[in-house]
Amino acid sequence: MTMPLNSPLPANGGYEEAETFNSLGAWLYGRGELQHAAHALLQALAIRPAWTHALNNLGLVWRAQNRMAEAEASFRRAIALEPDCVPARNNLAVLLWKLRRLPEAESE
Image 1 (cartoon, rainbow, N blue to C red):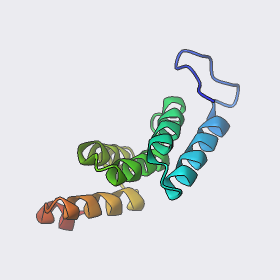
Image 2 (cartoon, rainbow, N blue to C red):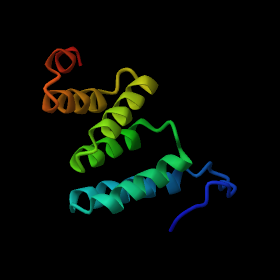
Image 3 (cartoon, rainbow, N blue to C red):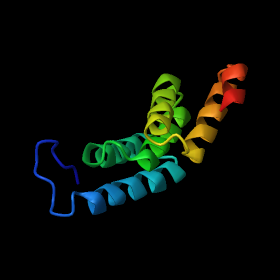
């Protein structure tokens, strides 16, 4: 199920739908279905653009797809929105370590 970006949100602000897409994305990521996981997480973020949990999950998917620049941007956006978001900080540090950007990784 995809929701066009210009469609009106349900009365609850679309939070339940966003949570469904996020859960689906996390489940698909766990199964290794990375393209479908990214699509589901992007749907969640189309509904709730500032949701740090979905941004972090999307960063994990992109990192698994070796889309390092997109993964870094996703983790950094989550951190910008919620500076104490430990999962995003940890995942950014792992990404930076994998990219051999050790001083930056250590600062996270």
